[in-house]
Image (cartoon, rainbow, N blue to C red; front, top):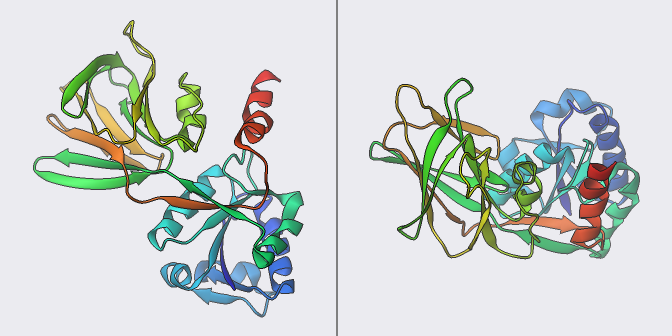
Length: 286
């Protein structure tokens, strides 16, 4: 068995966690792969195989992401390209996407015994059409259309399967997967959605409309959004916080369920609502 470790070494706890993980995996006779860029950081290990990132993804059986939710999401989207399962070890703060905490590394043995399950997560396909060109992104959490930092609020029009749904005057709008419902969408007042339900959530940001509420669409719907762009109004498209594309006048953004899924490895049998209470709801009440 081969495991590709993708650590975020800018996190203070990520390095010691990665060292411990490597020791444990090698003790289980699991071959460890790392990107070449980490070679100097783990020089004390003699049996690590260093690869180019794409080569390691092609070769591995699992991807282990060590860091916060951003690291896990970033690693998962890379693993998705090769249809490889990924699990995260929380070396950040919230770690809602993580399978393990740093004090649960003895559960790594479950990779050998097969005592794990695969949690398939829906993604969004986001297409930005501008001046006859189309660029496609994939979102695990969300696609956000928002106003510029110094711009006025933006007028947005939303269509579903070609039929107008609503006009929003707002700071922006969030299109979220069930996975992303506990991220930015939740902070904007959106609903928590069970990840076993495939759907698309739409939540306005600081809406100036009386209908400033979330709307849930079934996963077979195709949504289209456009923004009123002029000299005083700017709008940007952000996908999972990793891209920031300025929208031009006449641009449209299409949001729909992707045919591609991310596969997360679950090494614990905690139900979603127990994790939700531990990591989010109880902290919100503190």
